[in-house]
Length: 391
Image (cartoon, rainbow, N blue to C red; front, side, top):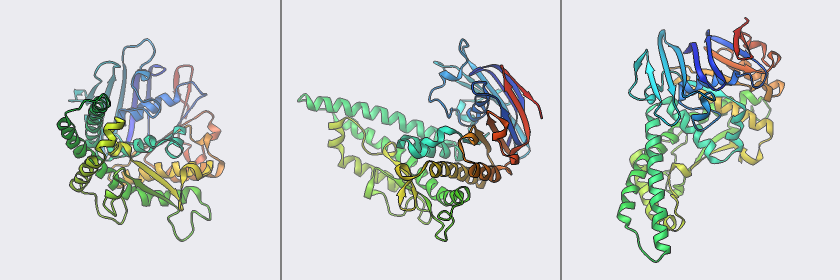
């Protein structure tokens, strides 16, 4: 899989940009603020309908413009598809595939897959649980686009149920009562969608964990990382279900997660904590309360890993994602956005060695000297509102 052509209009700082891309490495070189990251961000948006830098679409539209357009010609297994996305803050975004209107933007998911490395990724290790939940859910959607709709359904139900809990809590504190029959209906919706999402995450962690262990050993290349035990870096899913989560779920050697079993467990746990939820006005059970624990040996990476170890874990997560998606049958495009400047020489060289053989690698760098020789393919200079191929 690779992007053969990228075109953007009024996207971020670019009134217009047009790039013909080849398989293999392509390096975009430019000083900070010249717009090189904006271009690879556009590629990521084609794949995910989201940005790795901002949560909302509004900042993606150039100041003074009403909308932005991103177009990409994507080649997969010898077949080319043209994907076009129109981003209109405050309105519904629109999508087209081969110039025919798509039913909804989510229909383009799966046409292009990307794995993006960026300095912001360090938050996956050091940040709050929401960063790790987003990492899991984004990868889930890349593997199976249907999870985009499921994720949206769960978040919608969660908002409505939480609003009802606040109302019920206020009524209780005021000496009144609330109709809990409505809450029971929302319990059912939350458990149904939540169980599907939780099952997907658990199976994802089980599939991803061996790849993370192997990738961390390759990136870190230390005596500890390569000792015979082999599982220095590991993943553990921490569920709000606690002991109600069936044993073995999320373990590489365990059984696949059963949504029906998880739905029953969620309903039971919701009933058990109902009084606490009403008192606090928040939903205490569900995937929105879960976390992905990143382990180095017996200790969590968050709070215990050094800066270098944290970077090694981040790289391992992204490399593991790449290998897992490739196993699924569609090798993703790798995007390395200003990461080499963040790495020491050894990790820089090791990462380049590990990704150089990918079908397509898009790299951004402030100076070309930051890019290892293994990735010296096509080169583009980005400066003063222009992008120009120089090699």
